Image 1 (cartoon, rainbow, N blue to C red):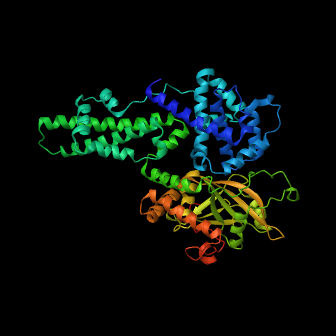
Image 2: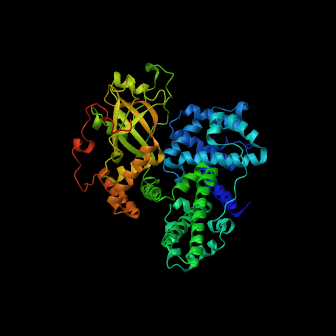
Length: 534
């Protein structure tokens, strides 16, 4: 095992160790069901917790999660009690603020990354054929899921990691190229410091993963040396160059060629062999993604901590009551924060966008009759339309049925995130990173209260997620003066003001009129094409 693989193994061990400890603390009944026959128990425990957290984020049914836990614990030989209470205990705990790796925007990459790492390590001891059998029988991953995740034996041995200067020494056709590159680093005034400063502008999570930090730094080094070499080579392209200039030009050309090949190798050959968790963390090295993560971490330090707490949220999934007739469905009263929100917008096309802890929520009221019937059918075949007027207005969008559906015009929901409000933009940023929202349909009861009719998970398409992130980061930059470090103090001030209001203190400014706060109701029509993502 080379140094890179040793760093990678140590980082994974530390990561899954923290998650396994959390499982022991918040859901001991689930921890007790973790089996001993699937490899290192702490890795299995962490992977099980991450998978259950992913199911919760995806709004899957609690019964399905209980089935998963049964199969993981003992497969067809499981004879214990149905672990549904243990699943609900865990999901209740996940509603409360947790460690950063279990924030909603990390649940999918964490679950997929730990499962891939488990498969890699397990295959070393028992072989890939048995790993595939255990994935199907114990981890509830079907054959299509195995292929889609790439949980297969590698077609060839993974290339060992190499730094850029090592590759330049080994592959450059001109032996002077490596010496020239090192001269740039040591003698070009300020160049080494600039490369270091650029490479150091990365997300905090990336800095804690030394093997990923190494990849990021080598990418930065290759890009910087390639750019400098290209600039100097262009300056030597003038006619009448001397022999020495021609030799220098050849060395500069070789540096640029090897830099391009190195970046291609990293991005196309090496990085795809990493797990989804590693790739997600590595993506934070980009400037836009890194600024978004800086803002999210500042938001989480204020709003995802035990002192703030989390309001009640329902635990059931989108098809929990699918087999029951209308009169057989249990009466599930909506939490007060949902009921208060929809009471203010009843009769309009607007819904309530919010986040509980790190999890994005959409809440939408539907009246009895056609709207309620449409809500019960929503996403029944998995298809959902989400659109906005333009990608520059990705904070204001519509959600509805696919084109051509009989209820295409019956149920058109509008969700607006105020682009002049810090917390709203943080919520939009969380949605862009999570990639899905929980949508709760609320139905008015005869006594004036609100009942939860149905809850579904709504995925957001990648193009819109990128636009949401860009919009949120732009507005947060405007409100913080481009300094993510200021966000925490501003959110702390807002939280203190909200606490003062809730205890009877006076707010700093008067609340906006209801129409201004929630916007003008739409006329019931979808945004007009072609300025739409529908």
